[in-house]
Structures are given as C-alpha cells and as structure tokens.
Amino acid sequence: MILKDNKIRIRADRSIPFTVEGQRFLNKKFKGLTIKIENNRKFMFFDKNKRKIYDLKNKDKFLVRTSDSRGIWVGQKRYAGKLNIFIGDKNISVVNTIGVENYLSSVVGSEMPTKWPMEALEAQAIASRTYALKQKGNSLFDIDSTSKNQVYNGLQSRTFKTKKAVRATRSLVLVYKNKLINALFHSSSAGMTENSQDVWKNEFPYLSSVKDFDKNNPKLKWQKRFSNEELQKLFPRIGGINQIEILSITDTGRVKNVKIQGNYGSTQISGLDIRKKMDLKSTLVRFKLIKENNNPKTISNTLLGDKPITYIVKAGDNLSDIAYRYNVSLYELVTFNSIKDPTLININQILLIPRNQIKNFSSIDKTLVVSGYGSGHGVGMSQWGAKYMASKGAKAEEILKHFYKGVQIKPFKRYFL
View 1 (cartoon, rainbow, N blue to C red):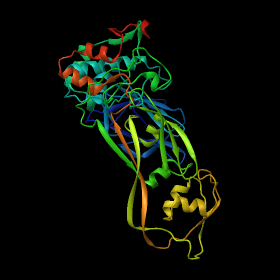
View 2: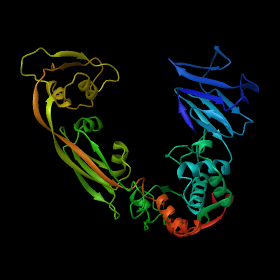
View 3: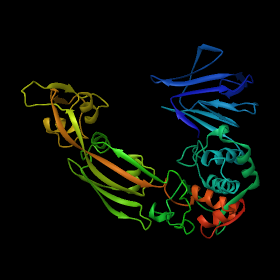
View 4: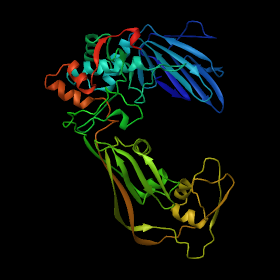
C-alpha cells in the first residue's frame, strides 16, 4: 500500500504513456489521470479530456502499468512495477505490485542514508527482506509503505549502492529454528536495545536487550515542550496535565506506565500510548512541569456583569476548539456551564460563553518539558548502531548476529514461513 486518500493523481514521467486496464478500459493509453471522492460521488477523468467524467462505484478496481523504466508518478513519488487501484467507500487505495528484490532496493534507501557503509546497507537489506516476507498482509496488500511496517518511497530512494547491497545479499534471510524471525529494527536505542516483551506482549529469544553503539547519532538526545493549551487538547477528559508520575520503567529505563493528574481527574496510560498520543520519538523519556511567566496576558473577565454569548453545539464541535474560537480558557467554559465531563457534549446543546473583556495581568502557565533519548521502539537492530559497527570493519553478518541473538542467515526457503 503506497497511498490511501480521497484524491489520487497519477501521471507518466515522460512522453511515454501508461496503460489503464479495468472493467470499462481495455489497454487504454494516457499520460495522466485523477480519481476523486467528493460529496459522496466517486469519479475519474483523464488529462487529455478533463471534461469527460467517468463515474465510479464502490469496489471498482483498475490496473495501471508502464513500459517506462522511470516508472509512474503517484502524487509526488515515482514507482516501478504495476499500480492496482481500488475504489473504497470513503478512500481510494493505491497498491504497488513489485518483486521483492526491486522493492528492497528502494526500501534500503528509504530506511537508511545511502552514504552509510555498504555493510550497514547489506545488514538493512537482509533485515528488511526478512521483515517483508514475514508479513501476512490482507486481501488488498501485503505490506504498508510507512513506518507502520517499513518505509518505501519508491524510485527516488533507489541508488547504485542500494541495488548493490540487495544484489550482494540476494535471497538471504534471518531465521531462528528454521523460521523467519520478526526482524524489527529502529533508528537509535540510546545505549541499550530493548527486550521485545518489555514493549509488547510477545517474548522472542532473538529480540533480547543488547549493547548499542549509537553514541555518534547527532539526534541521540532531544526535547519537546507542550503548552498548557496543547495539553488540554491532548487530554480533554482530565483537563490537561497538572502532575505526571512515572509508575514503572523497563531495565533500560524506558517508560512502561505513567499516571497523569489533570483539572478534572486522573488517568493511567502506557508508555507506548503516551508516545503515540504526544508524538514522541521514543519511550526513553522523563517529564518535567515548569512554570513560565507570561506578562501581560489577555484573559476573559466574567465579573463585569456582561451578558454571555449563547452558542449551540454543532456536529464535530469539541470544547477545546470552541474555547479557542471565543478566546476563553477551557477551564472557564467548563466551570461557567457546570460541565462534569468536558469530552461529552451533545449536538444542539446550548453553551453559555463568557464575553471576553480585555484585562492585563501577570500569569504563570505550566509547560511540560519532555526530555528523551533515541528514536523508535528500541527493539531489534539499531540502524545507528549498525552504521558504527560497519565503520569499524564489522560485516553485515556480524552486525545482524549482534542485534538478533541466536539467529542464522540462510537463503530463503518456503518452509521458513
């Protein structure tokens, strides 16, 4: 799967047209087409006659292929192979059908800088091949093109070095007891990789914590700040964050569970979930609430007896957006309307919004500072660690057997599945 959207633009790279095959098109040649889902209507048109609109139905599908070695443009990226297009209820899906080895020559360059040592690229090729072949997929596609699986950016990431790395490792995979391993990898673990069971439920002997060599990663240490307003939008049910306590960590220091206290209550959340919710690079983090002076600041003053604004809740509304729109705090809006649960408001519910009188004052806002190390889940091969080992003369096999304990590297066989 390379794209899922309600508007898809496909075009030829040069003067060589591509071919469209489907229920109503039989080997028709075009240089560009657009498919849209708009106002519950599904339709497509071709560049040479944009006025002629073809209406589409749910579950319609098309095949797009080209003889051009430079591939086909889908949005801002070029792809080799064939494109299968599926019309869904609300989205259009584009699936690139391509052989595993050609796919890998783009994956290696998408996942790892191509200027890195060849042995690191070869280690990535073997890990990525193993990971891809292990995936079960679904009725539409085998593997996603994003970090949900592994990144695949098409032809723009295929270079001489990535093709060489894939050729040098052709068909080689990682196995444990003659079965493909779950060859997870990440950018940087900050000194020690993580046990699989400390991140997810499943324990794999080959995904055990080992020393990482990623200290040369320029982005090893990072920091992210969240304002009080941002925290209230992220955690509306409890009214932001007034206190955050780490309840448990793994042996490598990654956060497993935290307790958050807000204006309206508290909640517990896993390290994985808070990383996803707050878009953090890793779970190897620590939290600090700091007070910051803002002077002057504008606040609504409801003590002057002005008649409040009446607002009727519409579909899609939430309190945070309403408060922002009328320049009042979420706390004022909740308190003024005696709302017990700020996540539960109803369509056509009447809200009273205090009028915003200008008043300058010196206030103290809390900012949450998240300080972290590394990038990714921390399980399996560290890409920065692989780079360091390769720069010190380690071969791809040595790199892989360091990060994946007890594995063997063998040419792929069907019974490995």
